[in-house]
Length: 361
Ligand code: PMP
Image 1 (cartoon, rainbow, N blue to C red):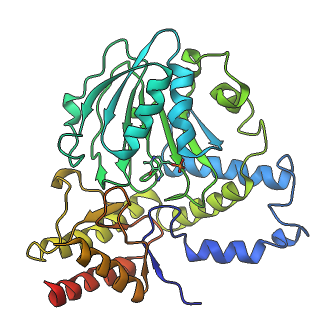
Image 2 (image 1 turned 180 degrees about the vertical axis):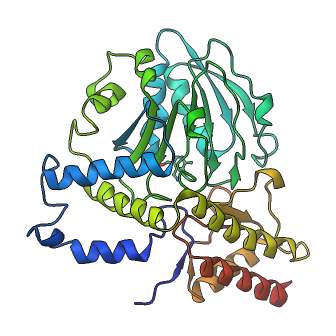
């Protein structure tokens, strides 16, 4: 088996140990005579995995007991509308920080469902900076404040979070959940698609403070109401069983490898190697992102010309490094360095960057 270094932004690389375990179990789950993805989602066999995934998330992310952990379908994209649908009724408005492409999508759906007040919009600076959390003060009557903890396309990451007092703080953590330690007690609702740090695509994790349900509308279609999923332990309808099954393995792998603190250290080291290669290139590689907000998950950079960027991506691919092309909306190069990207992947890329700059600079 010749595994390549995979820098895709999501779906993205998974731990080889997890893939091997899935392969071993796929036709006959631990002598049960059937696969985990062939059994009823009401069976004991599945239920155990489902609940284990919940308790591993709670343990690893230090999720307080007064939070529910839900597994939903529809991607993080569904949460762009589910959050305002549930909490923006009764002529309320919400506050949002518009930090890049993903925050803009969340904004656009929220605007269809209610009033949004934008507290910060990074448009003028082409989404290369974030506000100082101390300056982010939500309106007292806001239903919630929504932020995007890591902008997957722009490569920006909040390093500290605003204090919102009594106003609930909601975060799209799709691209950095479980990639670093985060004070979960600060957040009233967090959502994240699994396909970056947690597992394959198909399941969206929602972590919600229980008292949020008191503020939610109760006249929504059944799937769109958080209350449904809380009441039924995310088993109201058939959950994405394969994704949850694989996620449970990724979480067990994370735990066996030192938990989130160790993952954070590894991620800082990997990202540090790429930023260092950039810094020492004499301006050949340039980060568009303000230093204080550079992401440890999605490292983006530009080369002197678009032709060189194309050549960089091509030659990297020929050398066994996949997924380095920047998002089509912004161009450039992007290396996504999620939890399962090995240190050697980042080392290989950093070396490649040095050689490429020496040849083409
Ligand atoms: N938010 C962020 C920060 C993302 O990176 C993505 C996907 N790349 C999404 C939301 C949308 O997620 P999904 O494709 O799971 O709907």
